[in-house]
Length: 111
Image (cartoon, rainbow, N blue to C red; front, side, top):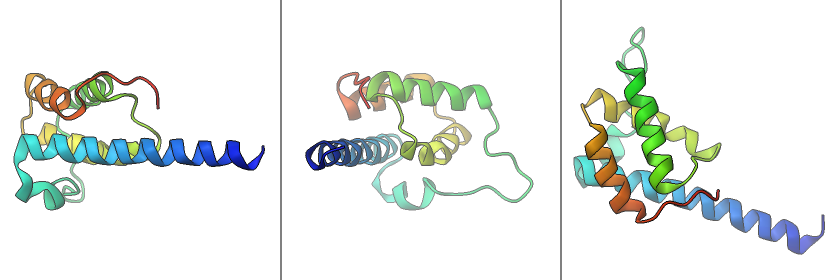
């Protein structure tokens, strides 16, 4: 691989990571407010408790995100905890659609 192709691939990866970071943070901010972003997104449950109470909700939130914001990259999977916390806090599909469509504006299937 030549140097320019490697640079393009690196730039694409960095761009996709920034997109995932910014999109998930904006969705969280729209749903819960700015003051909760840093603490609640990474909030872990007690030992012995499952990651999420409703696994269907977790799948739905991930799929809704991907429909509006593009495929969640391998890097972006770190936000599954944030999606689980959204479910555990009662976020509905309707709320997620509204937040994701506002945060991402258009569907983007390209990683």
